[in-house]
Length: 288
Length: 338
Image 1 (spheres, rainbow over the protein chains, first blue to last red):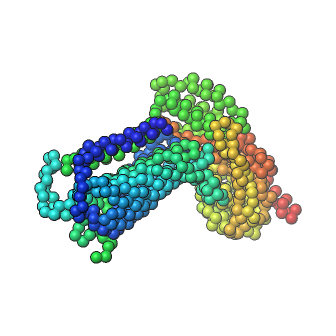
Image 2 (cartoon, helix red, strand yellow):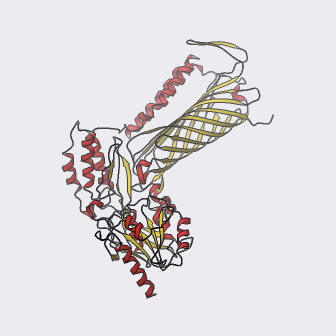
């Protein structure tokens, strides 16, 4: 436990260090209209590719790393001061084993007016993330079907940079030269940290996974009896979004999403992480 | 712009390091690590130490002394496989890419089943339906159904078809000889076809602690009333020492059915549920984590389930099957009593 605490502290300090050193001097006041002041109601349709990593100590001490694909449906509502987002997400990761993950996510963020640059915006708030995993590894025979669920109440921080330009503008970044076309663009970094972390794992000393009880007259009873919710473990997530909007209000977004969780459960722990490279079509759903 | 790229790069690199947050990677090919891992898993979870009077600590001493640095995978496999054989349990297997260890209880006993004799002299024109071979025998008075593996899926519709097809017979013979087991879900689907009222049929107990005698409460096992045509006439289940695992499970449960009798030899045993796992070197294993008890608390994991009517195959006479004949006689006797 001590080891984990120190690692998480290490992570937090590293991110804070990077942030302060790179952008600390940007903290100056402003009230000019920016991309952040615009009210938007968006529907998002996403596809992602990436990898799923898990380790279930009840059946194996080894990590399984599987490539995968998935889709997400999102509803996003921005005002000049708040952001509501709701996601339904499904992913399939497979090689010799199969790992199916389903997520339901909601967050509510509010502006934190500490950044004074017109180009910067900071929001903080809370999120509810619910995840269900279904895993199949036929080599484990009667333990071949694994299932677990997570519910996490999380603190969220999101910092965004307005990259919009109104006139064509040349740029140079190391060896890359080009011209920025006019348009509304935004780069965001979001971090979620679990505050209350619940996980539902088999609660019996000797895990009898679904494969052993599937199809029996007692399967539902056994399932309900053997899975118990526990309040332990941790969960961290980060998301980097690059978003650009068209004059119609529609937009596109490219994201890198990282989610990592540790669930000690009742007896033997479960580790999980996903990496997603996601492409999203944002459809303006606001009546003009 | 440069700073933003730098920031993004650092974030992505940082995000790729979730394993820094987890406990260390346990993957290892070290023979001592793999030996200790397997020994501990069995020690903490295997369900028949007390019942079989196995001194697991002594076994550790014996086999750990055979482990040495630099031993080949084949040598390690032999040591680990031999250690698992000390459990005297065909539910204990070590599975590597190049071999599977097994206790192989069947080769220590005589077989009581000849497919040739059954097919030639009893069901020469047998029908195949799903996982079953079947036909009328005894001049159409009895239905014979052969089910050779519980690995083969059975559906309620298949059972409904069979019970309707044989509804006018005096009795059924269900042949489970040489059936080495498979999915226990098939047990319930078959037995529901003979079950007119839901009933308690057995109990299961599971290891629930690190000590060898740590078990949870008895968990009741039920067979539900069938949803199709229910066959209520006598049913003879043929068994022998090659009937293992799910066949033993099935045989224990039949003791709760008045109309069902076991005919043949003892089953091979193995009523507990084996659960699978993986070693740090990637090999897989399985062993029993529960015990199956009949309604009187009897355990048949090692000795096997005794038949109600004992009969043995006579390998000197390859024109008849003494066990089928004994089952036919019993059906006649039960029919006459009614």
